[in-house]
Amino acid sequence: MYSQNYYNHIRNRNKKSSDFLSKLINNLSIVLIILIFFIVLKAVKTNTALWMNEGIKNAFYKDYTQQIKSFAMNKLSSFNLGSIKVFKQQEFIIDQVPIEGKIVLKFGEKINEDNISKGIIYETETSKDVKAIFDGVVEKIEANDEYGLLITIDHKNGYKSIFGYLDEIRLTEGETVKKGMVVGVNGLIPKTKKYALYFELQFNNTSVDPLKYIKQY
Image 1 (cartoon, helix red, strand yellow):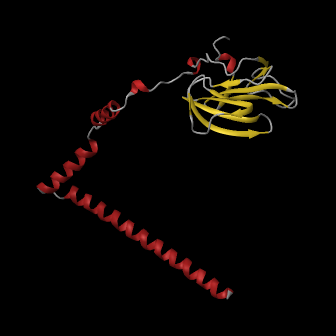
Image 2 (image 1 turned 180 degrees about the vertical axis):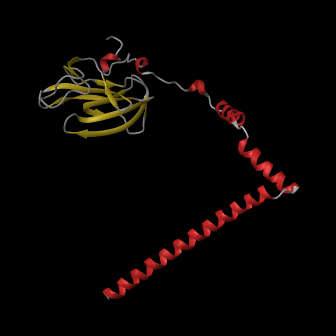
């Protein structure tokens, strides 16, 4: 059985090699025919040959810049560019804070020996509503050991806000969010026995300091 399979394998391999060579020869033949055709066109001086030769030369050397420009302008005119709002990093201003509370940890401060904070942490006396800082769409709802229940809102144009330490989320993935809409409520951190909210702001998937964007700061 082994020798039969082995010889079948050799036979199939040889067949594949033969098929490949056959295809290669066919392709080379086509290229050769085209090459001979162009050589004949160059050599023959009949009116038809000269006309075809001149047509090929004109098509090859023709300047298509104007046609390309015209095509691009026609396509652009079909878009409503005025409806597209693009934010630069410095133009994104947060005038709606996610929660009223005391900031106890700032961006870039040490969490422990090995890690620094990618966001800020608010502490509150009781559980409070957490509000969206800007219009957007709920991208993801998840949970982890570090920040508990989290929600990520995509504000488009590169900006995303992430809220953690939530006790409750009142939105679903894919849902449209308006600025000031209640996202959920913050929860009690078992370790500190205090109510808190983790708030991270990202620009092009890189964490940035939220305090540089909050209007009151």
